[in-house]
Image 1 (cartoon, rainbow, N blue to C red):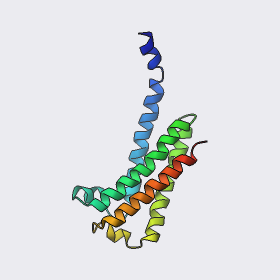
Image 2 (tube, rainbow, N blue to C red):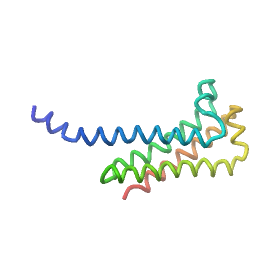
Image 3 (cartoon, rainbow, N blue to C red):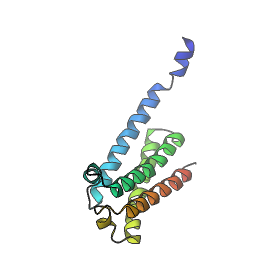
Image 4 (tube, rainbow, N blue to C red):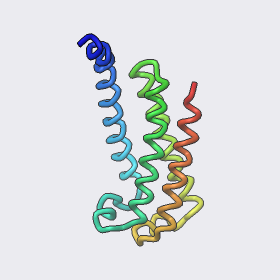
Length: 136
């Protein structure tokens, strides 16, 4: 029974960090879908693969640095700061990709998978670099 007590010593911290992460993911998705000129969730429900690829890559691009922030943060406030940075980076990636692909706002709703995959890949790539940069 002692091993169980030792194993569960960090349960409180786990619950705090996990709940914070779920909250950050919800905030991120809410902000992200409101800055894009199309409705990703509705498009995904309709079977739009471009929207699914772009939003999936963007979500992965946010969660990777969020996971790194959990691993490296010294307290929940530190996590909140780095989660905010990860959110801002993903928003900037979206804006940069719109500069590279000016028709992106039309391409995603039109189901042009290439544009969705490219946005998703840009977001995931930025997330990997962002996560690696958080290894302080």
